[in-house]
Length: 402
Image (cartoon, rainbow, N blue to C red):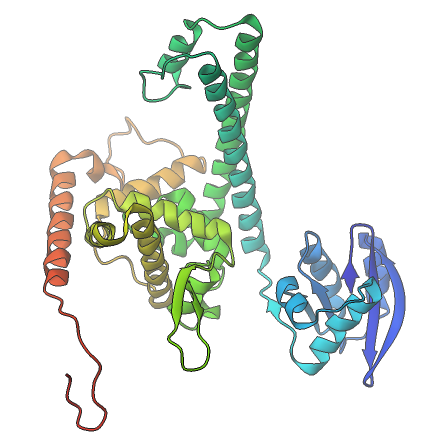
């Protein structure tokens, strides 16, 4: 099926031949009527588009299998000079019949809902950033000095903003932008609450929170992107899935040339890992020692991407082996989990006369003790890497190393 917004072009592959069926309306009733005419042994193939998952959900009960194809790989395999909807549908049928169809993993309903929530949250954050940039652009255009406060849009920053000399139309524009920022802030709080409700009892999210630098937003985004960790047989496949693997060019007897990261796959998950890497680089621990070692050789940005790749490998091992981070800080991890519970609507326990699971994070002595243990781990990793020596290849004849 070559699906569009209002219709789908359908082609059948039967006994080694293509048969044009016609168009099907892209409505639930139209798809259900088409599905009732199919057999339980049939297979349906569609390309990954905005409404592909809905088509799979509707037609799935009527057939043996509903498959979502990767449109980029299909285009690379079956590039044609003549392109019509009938030809595109026929290409999908032929690739599936020959066993060369590049499939896309179809998530379950819970994972698909979490992906939608994470994507909507990302859209709201991006929109709010654009509005804030408009306010900064107005101030810069009228030679207003930089705000002396940490945040221009908190209460102190807004009080400072009202005292600046600006034209009346620009002042009205800033007022509209601030109202928009407040509205987007409310939407963001609602989305955070919905994500927290969906991830409160998720063991994978709780496990990722044990990594220093990974907060609730990052953990939810990574889990939503990964889905079932069992579909990645090795950590390198997860690294490739988020586009953190380097590009490689090699031909003939020439040496392999490694370039920048591929940036293929799920870009939002890659952004979440880089965000977590930047946060982990500021906290004591082995990840910070790794970041500093790479930064001294390659620079800040390459070091952040390297830490993100290491985090992807770490996530694979933790979720596959169902183990928490070895260098976790228990009080900090408990505080993160409590934050999820509060966002999901759990009642506050202040003043009830008992200590909650996140009470230890409020005790400075315990926080300092955990920080000291993380600093010891950082120094240990640094000392271990300083003792590394370059090694040559092993001679296969006698097993000696030159």
